[in-house]
Image (cartoon, rainbow, N blue to C red; front, side, top):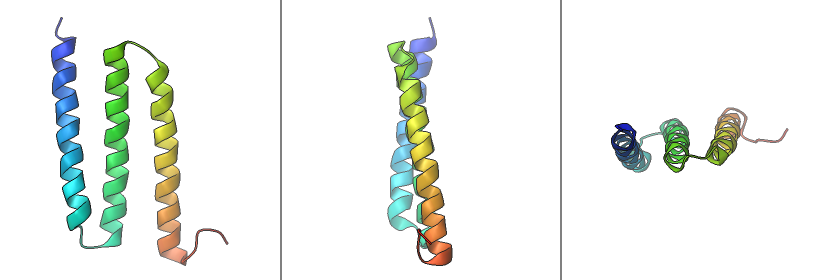
Length: 90
């Protein structure tokens, strides 16, 4: 009964967090802050996908969320390795 209202509140809260992350992405003073902001945006996108999967009532979106998580993790590790060593592939 209350699940649709809770999902609407959750989706709007995560959408607001994404907008605030986007503002932080453009105003971040260092590259490290931008990388952290992109990682946070990935987590928010995963939350949106999972919430939409609950809304739609299907488990297919959970697989999409896992793919987003893996892609976000690999991207964050690649950025950090590039910052530390200057190249990604040794």
